[in-house]
Length: 124
Image (cartoon, rainbow, N blue to C red; front, side):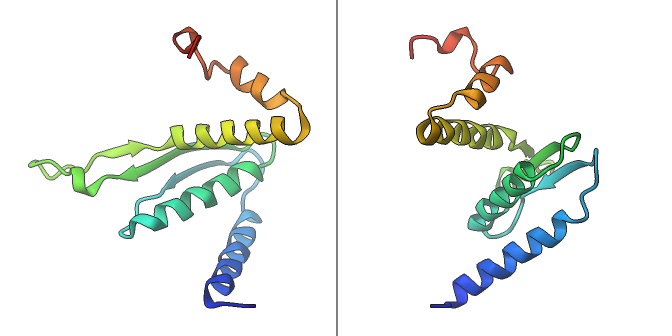
């Protein structure tokens, strides 16, 4: 059954796939997931993850940010918050899924080698 929601989801996926065609070798991507509707930031984060997972070797994700308008100070400055820890969580989710589905630890090993967990987390 094609609901309006599923049609929009397919249209959005088609747009992502089309945009992916324009990302060249060794490109550096930056994303700002600020949006007026709070739930849309989740969709945008998933779109960033799509690009991250489909990037060619040599491409890299430079920065993911969120403009926290509600945190604006008296000086009128709106803080820009680094959202890369959310992408790291997605990496850990992918590694856990790989382990659960296939019993392999390649991604977990890589995350550990990259220093994602330090000694302060031992015994937790």
